[in-house]
Length: 121
Image (cartoon, rainbow, N blue to C red; front, side, top):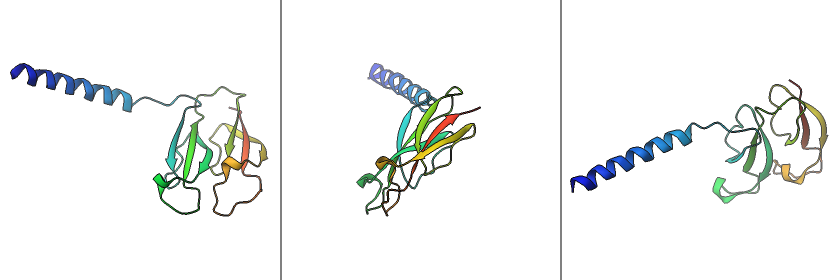
């Protein structure tokens, strides 16, 4: 019984250490994650896609977004992003265009809703 208890404590400690290590890892340039539209896009990220998901509520308004980490890209890198958040510091808007994946409004339109961004500093 004592061995079983010691094993459980050892495994529990290892799992806690693994969880702590995994929770503090930094995202690499280009890494993406998904969040509900009610969450602000973190600094250094841009929105790259929008859609409607039951996991983030109901209705007809796009309520889920994919965000991409831009911090760490070298100067000269060009990426496409939705125009639903401002570009991070060091990035400039090169051009604007329409993308069906960036419809972040309940009222769809064919207006330009995306940017091509370039890392300048």
